[in-house]
Length: 225
Image 1 (cartoon, helix red, strand yellow):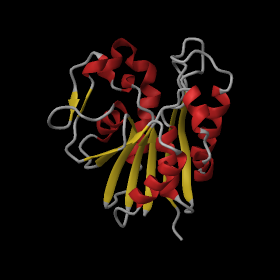
Image 2 (cartoon, rainbow, N blue to C red; image 1 turned 90 degrees about the horizontal axis):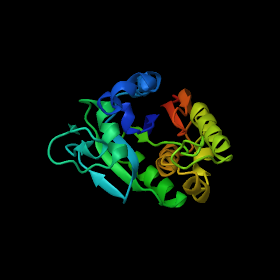
Image 3 (spheres, rainbow, N blue to C red; image 1 turned 180 degrees about the horizontal axis):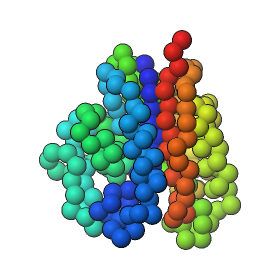
Image 4 (cartoon, rainbow, N blue to C red; image 1 turned 45 degrees about the vertical axis):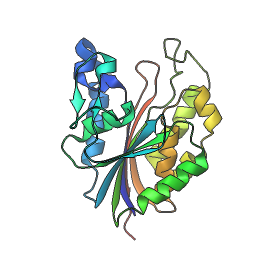
């Protein structure tokens, strides 16, 4: 049963060593991510979910690294195998034990919802850390250039995260999300599947787009019956 969730973005620049002299620009976003992670209630199982090249389970000892981003940092033991989304998730968690699950970026909504339900059934109580960026088309300097649809897409997701509304997340259009270069669509729909019909107290902790990429941070806690 899903008892709580934190939703965070995964830009490498969240890690101060990657951002270098620009680290202060993301101090507010970094603080919001830390707050969302701290709000995760103790659970029998903590799962980090993020997009990757394929669907894959990783154990608690899986490592991630940031060498592709110019910094020789590794989080976890052994050789880095985690995709970027899960690497940043591992960094955010620090020493908290967790397992890691990547979901293919192009996974269908149905597959994402099914996966979410399966993850929620893995233990009597389950907490999720859901990693995903919003659109990358919020300005002319954005990685995907400017698309007038991006702000509206991100606003709908922000409202769903702030309102604890899994139905909106479940209904996100994968084709539109791909056009807007949304990295979080599949993980958010995994969250929707894990939430099912339950009610959650939710709060949106950050809604920013400093580099033309939407970064959303949210916190969900299951309401007691």
